[in-house]
Amino acid sequence: MNIIKLCFGCIIFSILFSCSQDDECSPPISEYDIIDIVSQVSKSSTIPDGITPLSTSILSTGESVDWNEFVIELTSIKHFLSSIDKDRPRSFDLSLISKAYACSGIPPFTKEKIASINIISNYDYSAALPAGSSLNEVFDVVWNNLEFRRNSNTGEIIPYNLDEFNELTPTAGNLIQVRLNQAPTLSFNHEFIIEYTHVDGESFSLLTPLVTFN
Image (cartoon, rainbow, N blue to C red; front, side, top):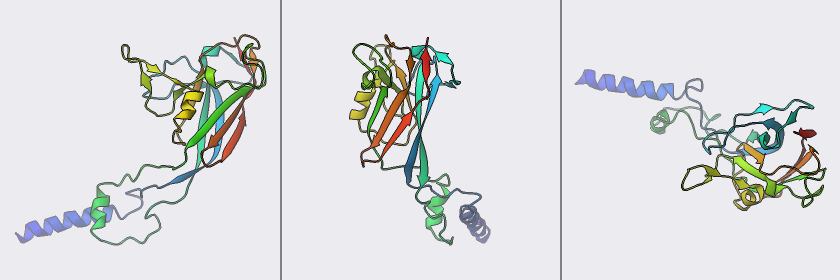
């Protein structure tokens, strides 16, 4: 019986010790703040499935692209506010037992919400959408790690256009990919201005490179 108790004690000590080491068990990561948004223009022929982001390739300077393969990707630059228990001295207590079963830590999170993303062009897109008009209705959100609507018969996703997406007030921080749902009819050269705003009023303004559509 003493041998069994001794072995049990060794096991508990091993668990506590292993999860008290920073190099063995990553401490839970806590809240982050979004300090910047960066954009990238890419191309993709992938059909969105609502499960994974589109597979894309970055457009080179001066490279033309089919309008229905053009993708704008928005990525958040994050600053982590704290890391729970990271700098706290370690001690052997019962709370470490629960930590032993959660060494991977708490997933990163933010409280920030998106109020609006608006895209406009410096060039006439169509007769109904002259330069300076909002193009939200012709850009579909094809990835944002959200629950997409689906066709009840085929199961295919039904993307939200940007106006519909804004109405959801989605959580910020996730990769956003948007793709055109309508071809330009006047100019085939476009620079897109992206105005990105959080609910707390924080805003970012981005300009894409000049893009030529085939």
